[in-house]
Image (cartoon, rainbow, N blue to C red):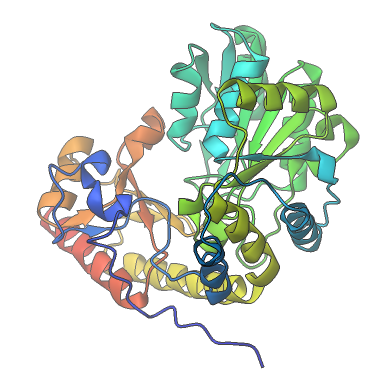
Length: 396
């Protein structure tokens, strides 16, 4: 019989360095106020598994915290995980360690496009995508997702037209999608990849949520579909979301195309990135080697939280709409039924509800009057957050 982890345990991070609890200003609060319940930044309120915590003691017990590099287990543990989870056979030489998915996106943009070139994204989407493009003097081209009754889909006619009209050089795919929670189907991924290949658009695929797939859905790495896509994609992923170890800041780029891979490595070296943090090196290996049981219990708990939250919202505050996500632990809450300004609602949630959510407008203009809620917490905290949400909604 396997071990049972306690995901109902409360972990107090209010007096730690946790950004969610100690940099509330970045999510719209006027100040750090610990009476506010933060359900914003996408890390979990769960302790990670004991084997990871034990592994992190190694650099300290050794007594020397020096320059580290990836060991053989760094590669083999990740390759084994991807084979078991996604049936994707990855070769060791394809893997490039990188200190974060977003730095990997920015590095790929810088090494494969010129200033003024266009990069296309599917909005609403994770806000750092905009920064990685705009702050590097490239042009954002938005392909707004189409909202259906139960999910969002890609408007492929608009996607292709925007690529042609703007001479797009690179696309950034969020797969699974943050914040709308879509797990793209094989048909959708094939259509996306075929359009990009037809118009010589390099694909970057952010697959950091790719392990957090809910029941009845399956994540497919776009690069795994065929050789055309394989050699035209930079895939970025990490154990960060899967095992709640974002603070280790260790990701990987999977780049089968040798020319693209060499450009990517040159970009990292050019920015002085050629060592690995000691804790990241051991934590990464421990997560992929020993974290499976913890993860399976965690995703089951998250799925129960999703069911609980959606049931509460549908019964207690039915004017707030939410589609059931297909992946991850984020709910995309729709407040468009209310006659209220977005910023006014945001401040009401913070000041009257004492509830901090991520403002949807930072995900693109089509995120206006949406807010993202992180439900990766114990049930007591989730219930508290939902009641705070109801308090504000009832006052509108």
